[in-house]
Image (tube, rainbow, N blue to C red; front, top):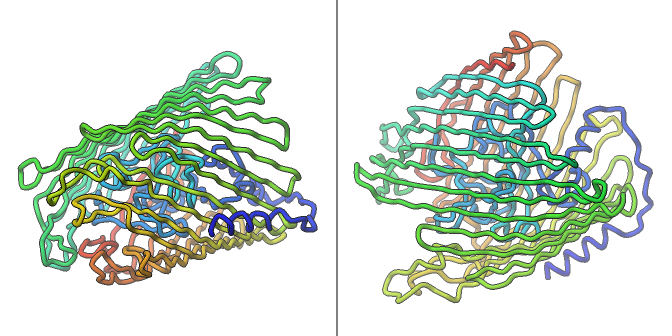
Length: 616
């Protein structure tokens, strides 16, 4: 049914409307927004051409709001829900449009970093520092045609910072509540022959109790992480280029214990987790046919090593890795036609278990006029445990006139059983369930974007629906995992942006999500209503600042107990002492609101920090 609705909806988009001529604008901000380039769609497109819902958050926006952790950045996008088991290193998950967190594929510079050792194969955002990030792209809805397995609910694509021309860098340090210190430095140099960039950051804090202190848990749980990013590139003859990138994080996190009968079954305990994560890739880009054919060869590698200690004794160890081989060729046939095709092979391991996936994909972009952009894709994947899957995707963006753009997309997703799901059994079973099928999803969204003639007011509304079936869940009856669950989700996402003056801007985002399982029961840990208001002040002088209000509606936990709604306000400020030196500060949870993201786990009250940065 969704397939038919999707094709019908996209057909409506390409009906011969009376097309207004595109008008150029002298508004620099409008032009910048129109030319934001999206890379997570595999074919480089502007945000206005993509058709599907893509949110792009760049480094300037991250810095303006004062975010230290990628988790907070991603939470600012409508339709995205985060949950963290206590602040400062607590396990942190991201779900998109009601799809559970392990249905979100996370890429760092094009390499999947989802945890192969976890039961559902999700990614823990607790340790990802924003200092290394140039841009975050959030693709909502099924995206398996673009990225294969795991992209069943959406994609978070993280692009790390690149070297700049000449010699540059920065040094920063900040201190604040809970004995927190965050500092780092970077060095970058770019020239005619090549470039490099090195960045190191550290965050250390005494923390707060992971289990809510108001429940009688006074013991603070510390967190300490060290991240190192190294990038380098060599310019080769004929426009070719060889690049290498490595991002590694080592973290030690204290967390609390399972305490039966306590709120959320969590209470003070002596638990420590040591985690080492690394993502790396080596890529060769080479243009051919006079620059019309771009070729990419990439080898990527991601590893995770986890070691847990409980009351001084080892309690859990896990090692996992992914190795990726990719080729993609993108041919610009002419100004209106682009074809991209490629092949991928991914090998995954979790402790002693292994799996592999081979994929072939093709994407075609057609721009019959300056007002209409169409994209179609097809992909075939062969998983050594789950068999073959074929997914398709359609997207369209249509500029009705100089003020309005209509867009829509339809896509399919799949997620192969994880290594853990394929191998685990208990409770009297003689073996793991070998008949597990991939989880499958199908989604459609339709949106309308409007901007005022001056470009100072911009709004967008998106309607979406997504059905997921054959979900894999644990069953005591079979002593392992089986395909029995399904989810239906639908909703509305609304965004608005008002530029009152060159120095004052207000952004608003709101999402309503109705997601239920096959029995009509609302999904756990998913608010029906959520939204942000962000006011930014950046005059020509040395001062700048922002105020962020975040609202999260009530949720229910896995036992059906309701977690209360909450509203939090954060304030950030900056002052430029000179062209090279700035002071900055941030006050979080200004109203000292007591709230929980996950039942039984605490969050910080009113707190803050101050810092200084020197750029050279």
